[in-house]
Length: 392
Image 1 (cartoon, rainbow, N blue to C red):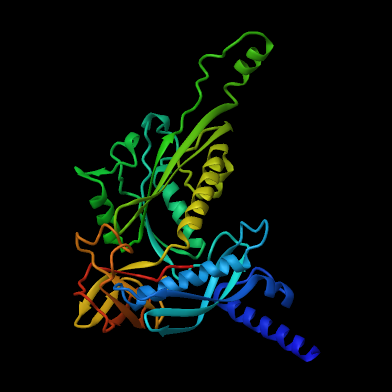
Image 2: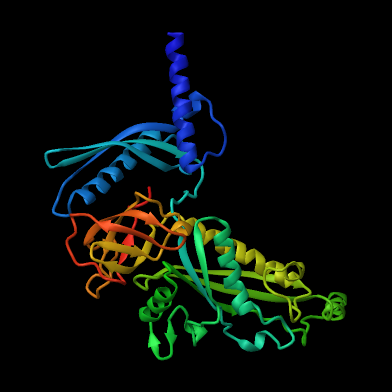
């Protein structure tokens, strides 16, 4: 009996170490804790006209649901299934089955197997007179640039900068897009296509007003003190809208307004660049840096777990080349669903049926190539895209 307990403990520890290498573990766990946070589960789904690949994904989703129910405990709402490894799969008649090993994590953010490309555009200011000519002019390109830098540092994104491009000729009506007379999704898609990006980051500096010191309300000693100090201590409000659009459909996926108030020396001297120590040492720069940190963290949490997508750059017979490679964490043996970019299908990547499957056989730094499988149900063209299976 003692030897069986020891064997089980060693086996659980070994399994945990294997999964740690794939997805990362916050801290070492003993066998008892591992047993409480992992489970072997099964899932199944009917094979329909959508094909075996869709049935497999549905079966995996069923296994994830079963794992969540099995591992969920009181007051464990913050826990989620962060890693699911399929260890066996088979077909019985018209039913597809999978057996998986699931591990519960206390982290709200998942570890994506791929890095997703995001392109940043300029953040215009709604009231240009709120930034004087003697203040830093780097806000408009610096804020999105630094959000992009934070996202790249997380390891989940590959950043591209087009911070000389403005999506909002009228910042007051953002996120309504209007560039050179073109409105809406086509502008987003054009920018994403030029940078081979999955997401497009944009925003607006909606408020950066210094509180007026011309008039001090009230009377008495307090009013006199405020009047005396108004040339040394001022207040400035800051409000920044941040948007993320899908680069394949043009859909608005993220919209949030970040607001704060700056007290003290509210100016940003000319020549101070966003992200520099000098910039962060000022009261105004420090508040903007805090907003940049919060926005990048919100975006990372929301899109770090999104399925990976990439464009097809070239097609030669049955050979498909992707505008993604080792920098995106694409690996030999990876399988992707292939979607058509035609007008009929572009409205719903993931909601329309894929035209086939491809398997990666060669990977370069920024490109990868593979072959279509025999299950292809359509013609693949440059400009079409591939998508990973849904991330658990």
